[in-house]
Length: 236
Image (cartoon, rainbow, N blue to C red; front, side):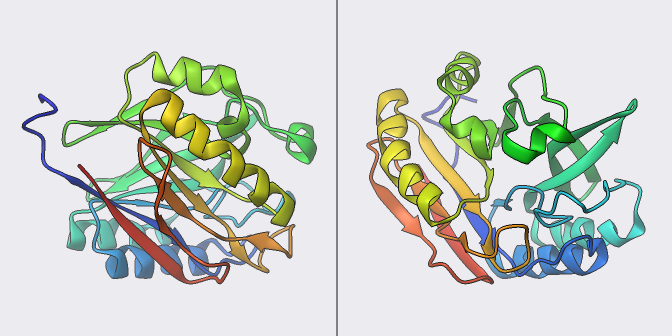
């Protein structure tokens, strides 16, 4: 679709109240956020289905608890980008999963895990782009956003926005807010980052602050630090 004829894209960033390993409860929180957001694309934080907890088990995309997310997407016409730890061929990955009315589909494996993640998770090998209504969304998970090689490889695929889920503590949030405006302006892309909020992870001081930056680097929407917040922006 030509960029002059594609419709605007509404994108929401959700930071629901999540609990380690509670897939059913977390799936229900995702479904509630999707219905509340009323957006074409709803983005969730890193490892949102399990919560960001290194001890939480992997998630099966066959788990019937995930039907709640599929149903919410069917009712709203939304696409949800959800974080999950998945096992494949004896390896575990931090992933981004697409949900729509047809159910879940693995889209992307985090390419640059860091810290304790590297003791458990294997790095993904390739960048990925999702096309939604003529908008090309480059996919990223947390530390990927900070790695120049990642945005370079993703941008080389042709993108209009750089989108993903994250978790930051207060110090990490300061680095994010210094880095992302420069990245958005350098590549002339929208950046949308859904960030974990609240106590339900390995980081009790998760920063929240989910935000969308415009191609000029300016913030166009931002949540505060509390769980349950949703912010929405329209990409034009």
